[in-house]
Image 1 (cartoon, rainbow, N blue to C red):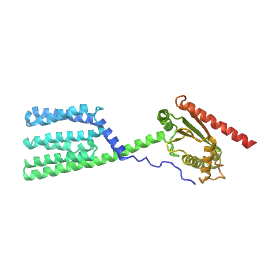
Image 2: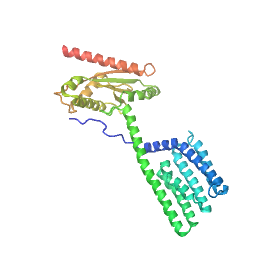
Image 3: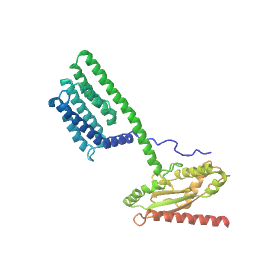
Image 4: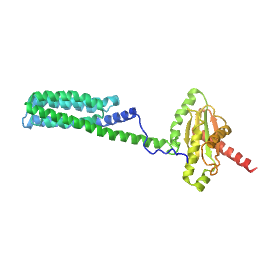
Length: 354
């Protein structure tokens, strides 16, 4: 039995496609995440400055300023004029600013809650950036700030502080790795669903929706190059009978063999689609060979495909039409090709009966 072309697994996507999906996700998430953090941070700074354990406006001023900066960024980071690829770096920079403000507060005034606030930012920042590079670059000033805070503490406390900060950054990187895996899996799944919407899973060819989506581009190219546009309609003869006698697995084998036979004789720039259960369409620029010649070529390829000639005669019927893209529509072109196919089928049956 011939191998079928079913897709057993989701399609693979390129590194560029994965990166583009990550960037778009970060861009959509960043405004509300940055805005929420800015509001909470500013509220805590005001609270600590007014009624905290050690009320002081000066001590909390760096954190309040960082919160205001984050709010401004939250308002603009989602705008269209901000490139999505830049957003992870903006998020990383905002994390550095906020952690730096907290570390400045800790280093100068050593508030009892400063350590907790720093770790609350240091742990989750990497998964939000969705970028290994931005995370590592941001980690350098964060760890440098942690080392500076350590110099302001007792030796024992300094060691504990650095260990905790390194652990927090490591946890952040692990969370980033875990989220990257899930986001990349989601991107691959969405790409697979998109492919299923435009691709026939049995043959790997375009489906009806897939070729129709490319018709405007093909017609525009025809007009620009000032060449006609051609369509060929290919119908498998006797597929229903083969299905009824030998089962749908054999019918699928016939469909796949026909698809391969068609692909072997079309031009590289032609569009080939499975139009229906036993129908295929070839769309291209310029003139194709006449329907009779195309029929003979496809059947010659089918004869070499390995499909059992005892089960299926290996015949198809081809009809074609060529038109000026300015004077016709895709639907009209397909109607004419379909009509020509039925005309050839009627001629073939009349010849067989004579």
